[in-house]
Amino acid sequence: QKEVEQDPGPLSVPEGAIVSLNCTYSNSAFQYFMWYRQYSRKGPELLMYTYSSGNKEDGRFTAQVDKSSKYISLFIRDSQPSDSATYLCAMGRVSFNKFYFGSGTKLNVKP
Amino acid sequence: DADVTQTPRNRITKTGKRIMLECSQTKGHDRMYWYRQDPGLGLQLIYYSFDVKDINKGEISDGYSVSRQAQAKFSLSLESAIPNQTALYFCATSDAGGEGGELFFGEGSRLTVL
Image (cartoon, rainbow over the protein chains, first blue to last red):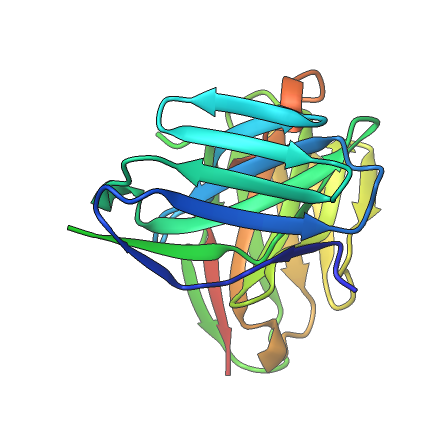
């Protein structure tokens, strides 16, 4: 079983839609939960991170962590064509700066 | 200029050839990583280094080796390339004291082994 599972998509939505991206994981020791955004032919860039359970909001983006269910989500409100990218979840432990990535979900926001 | 620079950006080679991918960074970070990205598999850790004298194997180190020449330089070698090493390779850095353990990635090196 992979440490982190993520639906690869692709996910296609109209501009303005609310997007929900999700990952599940198996290791209960994970404490850092991150979302990276990767544009075509570019390296991933950190979008948001959360520590332990709860919600974190940054503009149109909300990251949610449910440690009891081992489930994390990223919500994008009022999605824009510029949000079209691959979104990778990643997670790791506090004591060890090593991260486990999901396979990435490709998102296409149509104008 | 990019904070994390990878060379070459693209390389086509033949089976059995030795290949080196180089990474240099200007972020002043101690920690450097090499990842491989394949469609549907996400990013897999090949090797990582927490300082110049520290080298550690990741999930998929077989067939690869690394050298940490300086704090700012971390190179990945394929001693005898094979076709299933065709992939997109990323170098990344992180700050040991940074919160959230953010990784800073280069733009990738696309390797094709024929």
